[in-house]
Length: 208
View 1: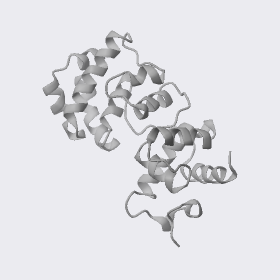
View 2: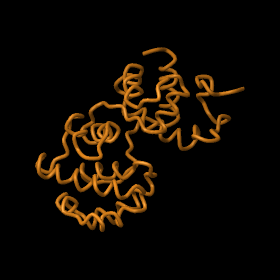
View 3: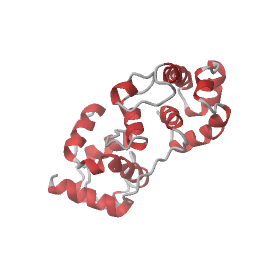
View 4: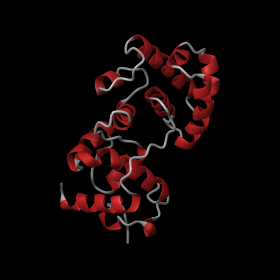
C-alpha cells in the first residue's frame, strides 16, 4: 500500500471508526437485497421508512414474487423510479424462489444475473451478508475517491478495480462505510465543508 493511501486510511479510521455499519434496515439477506434495489436514486433514510411497512406486508419472498405489480408500485412509490423497481423486484424474487431455492446467492455472477442487480448491489450483499471483501462504488465513493486521487475514472467498474489495487483488502468494505459518512457530513457534492476536512492536503480539488 502506498504511504499516501495509508495516511488517508489512518485518518478515516480515526475519524469514523472501524465498525461495520449497514445504514439500510433488514433482518434477512433477501430484505437487504430488496432494500438495496430500492435505494437507487433514493436516500437510505427514506428506504427505511418504506421498508418498515413493506416487509410487514410482504413478509416472505413468495409474497414479493406473486405481488400485484400495480399494488407494489404504490407501496414503493416514495423511493422513486417505482415502475422499474417494482418490475425488477418481482422478477428478482421469482428467480430467487425458482432458481436459488429461496436463498440469496453469494457469487457476483449469480447475483448480477438477477433482475435489477448490478455490481454495486451485488457487492453490498457480498460484503454485508457473506463478509466477502468487496468494494462498493456509490456516488460518495466515486466523487471522493476522485477528489483524493485514488482513481481518475468515471466508470464505476474501473473505479472498483482501481480501489481494489489501491486499498488493502481489510479496508474494502470499511472504506465504503467511512466514505458514506464522510460524504454526507463533510465532503458533500455541493459546497463541501473543506474547513472541517482532515484530508485537505490529499484533495485534488482543495483550493487554499
